[in-house]
Length: 447
Image (cartoon, helix red, strand yellow):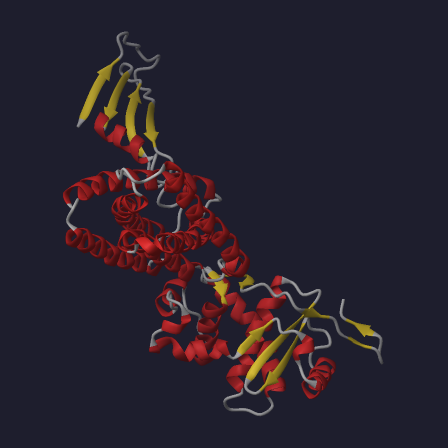
């Protein structure tokens, strides 16, 4: 619908043959601009407005929930991930009402025999357990969250499901109430750490225009809406199922199954461009067999998002390849014969390199130099994969692997970069053990 509005005072142009047009456009992205008005100066000043007021208001509301410049300002996997993430969040908030109702009932809310100090103490123990659990989880797994963001994102929500299940079970075991609720709080503490850390990693992945803060803010708006809707539906469901244990459990378990499915679909949508242990192994093996590099979308369909012990049979071949590589091995863990071989290989093959590769019983141990950089870690891992691959059909793996690296490594990195892969570093658990070696006879040192 178009509305034509003329100025109250008609302004004649200085020349009857001249005509000047100004168009007004609205939008935060060059690919999503909407023309809102056209101003002409001949034969008189006139304004022709385009579009309806409803469309303008709708676009303004939408700007509170999607990043500025959407969709060109984010990666293509942003929209499907957010849809499934919002659905799983909605399921979580509905179930939270059921589990909280059961927890409050177990604490004694509404019971004459319950005391305020008793309920406060129980709640304090529950929160204290969660805080300590969060610290311990960060201590043991915090450095691994970046390298396996998809897996830990899924594991975080599964642990949240376990925590809510413990809250729902708490009224059934009054004698073990403290133990059950503390176990649930411990599970949720893992969720808080893993979910927050992986969310930060995913936000950086989505940001194409250095707009991570905007994406994070809009994600908060989306989550707020999902929370309000989920709480409203949860209150209605809690009211309907009050006093009906079978209905409560059926609703809870049904929503939990949907929650796990939505989470799996959400992380399955992600096509991360960073190189971690598994993605590097998949890319290398395909390149070594075909000379071609897979795209992030192709690798996303091949990598597993579940913990390694429940990996499907289809990925075992790739998993076994990188499972034969140990990154950041401690030098003193080698026995005398292995240490002698490491020193000889350092002189003959790796004197100028920033890493050592040692083959031990079919396993390639990688010893990093104390001055090694992030790019050296990536190179050492790819070199170790080459050795692991060549061990299946060659005996002189040191010479052949070095020859392969000299001929193909730079080409491999260039092809990766051309498809959008980030080749600056390898996302892996931190390498905390390093070494320093030198050839004393020639006074050559590794700087």
